[in-house]
Length: 186
Image (cartoon, rainbow, N blue to C red; front, side, top):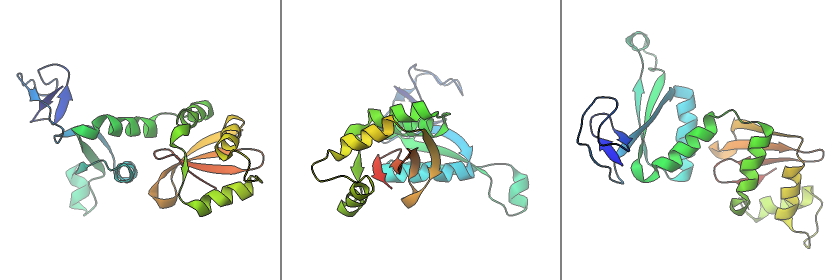
């Protein structure tokens, strides 16, 4: 991959599509690369997700002069992330911006069963109690069945601890998953 120092963008080709500079240098892991421009509110949500995932980022407020004349924020952020976490940041951004249907969200949750975890033993015990399980039951397998049978799965934005949440609603329980860390809660 090649890096344009002027635009802070990465390319497969050795020339910048934005400014036209040729003979770009190879990208380094610590280069901050342009990811996207978003609204200030959406940017704050993305930044919280990046913080939770340990992704180094930089933001530059952008907007028009009219807003600053009235002492308002500029309204938008340009977001840059270090190249060593660029693909992970891009995946998070794409997940947060895609139109998630119940089936797509179910697929995402079920594809990450190996990442499912509880914040602590107390949270795990609450889920066991709510699901009316004995210690002999396989908790993860039971939750997996609940997700598969869910009537609706909804992307609900930021929730507890500034984590982006997905709610799984079944006939007898509502479970919350972090869409980034896959922490499970009630």
